[in-house]
Length: 117
Image 1 (spheres, helix red, strand yellow):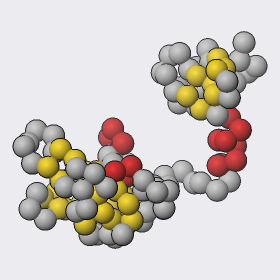
Image 2 (cartoon, one colour; image 1 turned 135 degrees about the vertical axis):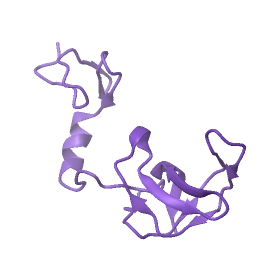
Image 3 (cartoon, rainbow, N blue to C red; image 1 turned 180 degrees about the vertical axis):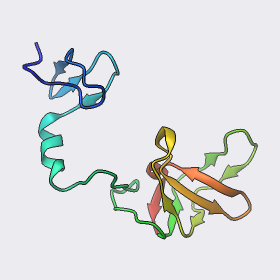
Image 4 (spheres, helix red, strand yellow; image 1 turned 180 degrees about the horizontal axis):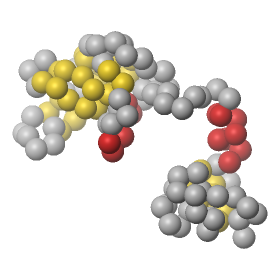
């Protein structure tokens, strides 16, 4: 069925092919083995990229690309807000940037919602 291929997310052997993608029914992870093999040499573990694909590093300045609601508050981080001195983390739920935003305070952001300034 899967020709010995296992899910890279959960290790399940119950994967199936749908077009060029492989899908794991247990964790719903989708991947392309050919693309993953090509990226393995160029992209290391823990590399954080912004919305445009630029590699981010600690201390970079980024710009928020869209309005973001602050969970548990009525505050909104407006698109175009500059955030200076970011720290990269292995945060939960994809929040891999720790920062301080003027007027709001300490916050965790997802790298998919920022671009390098």
